[in-house]
Image (cartoon, rainbow, N blue to C red; front, top):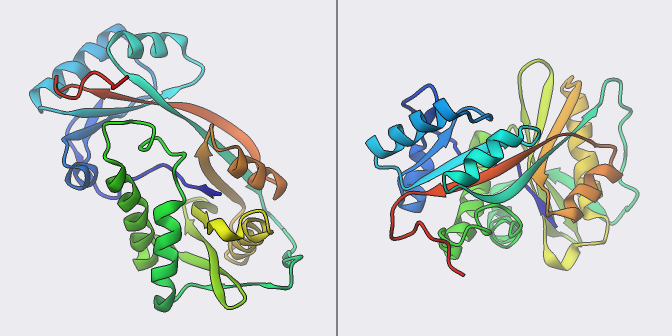
Length: 264
């Protein structure tokens, strides 16, 4: 079981009011990648978007669409975008939340340290196969594996404000990353549980530990993002008190003719 926030653009280069070029994604995958900045398409802005992409020789364009705007989905499909994911955001208010201890005394929650990196990188490399990059066949699978391994390393190196580890029998069984946002909000980023430890309470212990950490830092509202197809992650967060607050649709459009048609 794993969940992630599905936001990979750790650094980017803003080029347009409607689109921006994603420097990090482009360098990592070896394609020129950009993202649409609005979640609603119209006949006028879609033409501006397509013109900008042509001018900037974009290979792949991400579009995170409002799930409630039917016109946007039709325009996206008419212009060659392919649906690759449903982005589910869940939230929980944690004002005055009482700390919750793990019900499983065999699970020890602690902060991650450098000696954990080999084990946690392995969990990250294998744990996110429900994400949109794996469901878009243009992205090489080995790079998708490396993406989440790299994302974990970046989180450990300071992008996250806390990385918590679940130890079972002195072995790292899973991890969770926490980030403090603005306005007393916190975000759970990556959650990964090793395949041998799934269904044994490790995920619940990690999420509750993250909520305790947020409460200790005066966070009032915690959010997490996962995939519509990742029912295990959704059930985990719901079990820990999260409720769904929004859905969006992830689309990818490929421009280069050599990769434009999805394989059958």
